[in-house]
Length: 255
Length: 234
Image 1 (cartoon, rainbow over the protein chains, first blue to last red):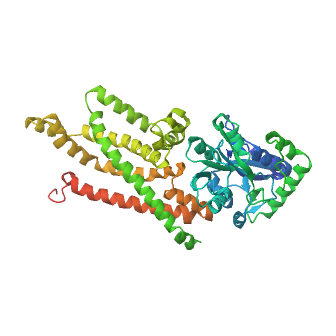
Image 2 (image 1 turned 90 degrees about the vertical axis):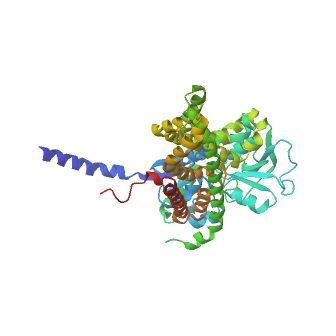
């Protein structure tokens, strides 16, 4: 009797397995401190454009995805250590990062902008910010841009993009350089951002490169699938629907 | 494979970070020691007006994580306009000052309890002898209680100093570039955990060993009377 039962269970497993195997398991690294791209909702759930894009791509690829939250500066090492299989964390495609990881096609591109107390400076030229303290996200293309172009200014490097604006509001620096979108969502549109405004026109750092999904170099198969899925969600309108939820301008312009 | 060139290139950054780590440790440890001796005396005082406030202080500081205390002081206080406009703001604005303040208060709380425990454990015979000699209360503290208690507290105090040294890594969360922050930057830029966190682990290990050695020497000198007798006990 027991034998028959065991046989039946084994048979059931054999039949059932192919159905499970169809869905590839993919772990996605996300960040959670970059609203409206990635943040933690009051109920503890991850939310934002990055999160929606990750889920849409997974649905398109018919993959079972698990989101893994990871601190920004451990992101690429964790990918290469196989803690997850791709990074959907608003990561700008740069030549340096390309040495360590591969990128999908870009999935959005937004400019950067300076934020300061209203009327504090006349523009954001290196000359008018001379001797002032500029706050910027540590280990980011923007930090590199400041280090290279604003040599006569002081720099305060914050750990997280959201902390950039906390430091600015606290008066620990004179001007912040942040994402044109995040600075609005996390700061200017909030009560804390009262009295602060964008300084000068927005700028593009590493123009045209955009933000991509990072994958391990040996994972060309997943990269192809991700690119195909990106193309599909842009073609079928899913991308636009998601983007319209968060932005009042076209974040896919120029990619 | 270990990339030695990454390690060699990062030596200057680690040395600078080490300077920050050690300065944070020495300044908070020194201030913490100076505050915790009188606080420990107050803590064991029979007068509740003296002992209860100190009890509350150590209870609160030991009951919350250091990281939370750091965020409360660095980010939390900055949220209030009243704080930003008051005379303390030039200090609280500075990440250095915030880190020093938090580490000092934290270690003061623990050290106060260590010293208070050692004071309570004073053998009653020592006290009786002191009173029999007609010493005043102040003289008893100065000449009997404190010297004997601080000596007995030495092993635990040594642990507290080592723990504080490890805790200075928390300063990396408020923009200070101490050795853990240096390691995190190298990790980010070279994507190699061994060359970054491996190196910083070795640095902490050497520091810990050095400090443990110093405290061993101090114990050998100041706690000679408590050492087991080497010969004659057969």
